[in-house]
Length: 165
Image (cartoon, rainbow, N blue to C red):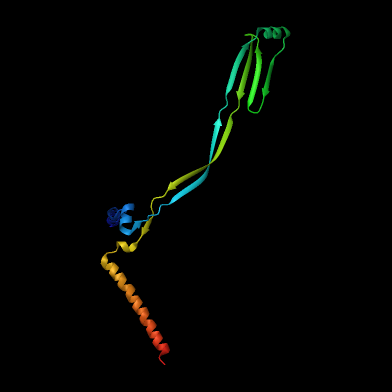
């Protein structure tokens, strides 16, 4: 029994279906002639990380290497600034001055106000009376007329009862 009821419910949902936008406009209303334009302003933040990089080079300097080899001095030093580290040293075996520069990673943030304009689709003005058949509209008009006749009759009766003397 439960399966039959469930099957009937599911079948009812599938048979009824949904109404499309166009069918809804045709049946219940009409499209407005006004066009609506909207403007949206938003702040966009773009964060970009620049990766660090390094550079290593060597310079052949025989005269400096000969002087360092005879005096047994170590030439090795480094310099560090905000985003760059520079280090240099002498390679005695290959007679080269080696330099290495290392850049630290950096983050760039760009903030920009973006304005986007768009046009909305036309508005649907719903008119429930449009979908009624002619006899229903006639009946609604008769009901309105009857209500006014009753109100007028009550007003005449009240006027007569108040001022009959």
